[in-house]
Length: 313
Image (cartoon, rainbow, N blue to C red; front, side, top):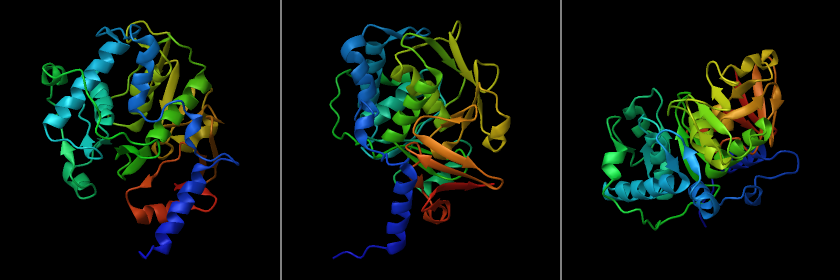
């Protein structure tokens, strides 16, 4: 019988407890999609001809075909399921299409933010780097829009690893979907709303607010005449990372905490399936958006306690 490290077992137990809220465990049936790659597939079943991006003009089907071609291209350059692949900062919507292409083939997207690639390679095996000078549309144009995934990840598997805080933060498909779902509920976003977000591909908030939320909500991404803008400056809603000042937030300020996937509150109100306590020296969080953990197990040991996840100031 294999020896199980009791410390590791306790850490995993504490992480799972932190992801529970009240008596509600992070179980899959609460989200209508079995993984991120099924999100766009689901939208195409009923709404393939609907516009999802105004500029460049794309329908759900156009977007899906680009994703399929991207998955084929990624395989052609040696990408494999479960492999970590760094997302480059490409012109919209190329990074977003690449993100879904990575998920479509069952790989894991990596946001390196400002961390040196060498530092990331020390923490992740078999890391693939795609150049910031890549023109994705040129790369994928000769590839087929037919793609059959060799591997389909489950909701509780890694979808995204972000290094935006300097520490590797692991987020599951479920984390991303439930956070987007919670934002949709909090902002009461209706289908066909024209939406805009100014984030660049350097944070988990970009993945949730710019890549996932518009598609999840059935919206149209429009940078010229949006009904709703969610920006880091001058928007209907303002994204803020200084959650230590939460008590001073206006009702249109959204608190961002990467360890809670992206959003943690709108104003001072926790998003759906999230609960937190802001103390003088720490933030205690519980809920379904709480990350899978840090890559660093020592950080997990010090941050996950029996009564939740803690960020210390």
